[in-house]
Length: 287
Image 1 (cartoon, rainbow, N blue to C red):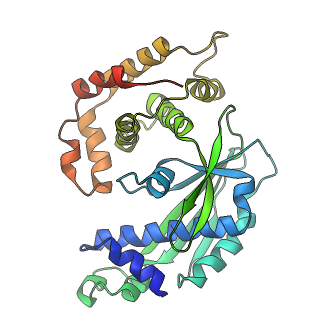
Image 2: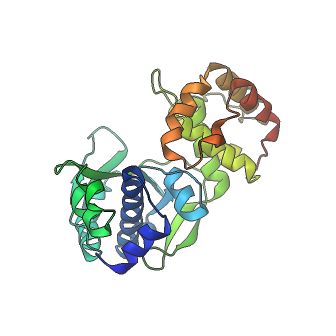
């Protein structure tokens, strides 16, 4: 395995098997982005979601999937056409992998999985034989890629540099539009009895960094998903009402349990409660 990969792992100073696993997933994500950049993918698509926030802006939590959106609707788009190039890129950095498309014919979401043997690559970064031997020989590192081929309108993108594993750049949604996408997830994501605390954690990051919410892009997402059918524009007051209603529905102890495995410091969750998130309604700024 190339020194650039071992250096990446060592900078994260992993101690446990879970931390090594996470570091390997992170570098695989970066290599996948590099491969897509080489293939001209970002001429047609943009990076968004939690992994985009972590890689480009330093969001301090791990994110599992890599999410993209086309810049405009294309029914003939296929993520599968990029997979051979991604496999070659990963192999060039020492990752023998299998890339598997996984897309439902009726869905606008194009998906694929990167799968590579966990034990093989742990041995290459030398966490110690005792640790490696606890990993089943058939265990796989999995990274999911998804792209929305029917994006909502009225968003903007910009280029940002990425330095690992080598310097390159990606196209990414601007922060106010990333915030709008995150709030759409918070308000309307349906996970049955589960609560995706990762969304709420990311919302706190936006508020802490005083990122304004692009309300019109949120409105377009809501119109596309059927959650806003009125002829009038979505107002700040209506948004805040939806936010307060959602806070009153959430079990924040379950939300904290969801995000905990992705954090380095569990004390970040000490204040999480319905009362705490209710107090934040006045912290939103709008674009």
